[in-house]
Length: 164
Image (tube, rainbow, N blue to C red; front, side, top):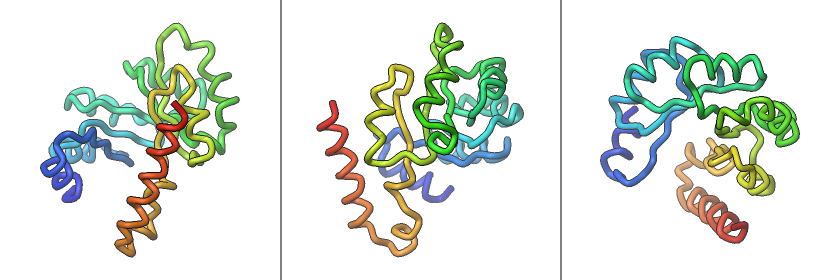
């Protein structure tokens, strides 16, 4: 949470999201630290309700139509599709999303995305953003290799600019 606070204070223009939020208490900590939104790998109604009460935009994780319907019942219209690639990728997302298209559900895919497939996801009308741990690998952070992290982020931006 210290890093979240510091980023929120020093880079106020950033849209700072935090995951993995698993408990109602974490929702409150994340909100207090200055995050703009939160995400979780799964659908926990207590976490979703606490986020709504705290005014923290929140994307619960869904992978099946039943989980998606649970999120919809809780008022969610922006959900994390996780684990995206392991679940069948874009082909599966398109099939799962089709019956709910009239509801305007937006999907935030994570899990298995990379520089090769990210543009395919971003071309989907119902996918406004993606996430990818390939950019911030834990070993780069552990080793303080900020130059490598910066290079990876620059490559993602370059790919996005070339793809649009």
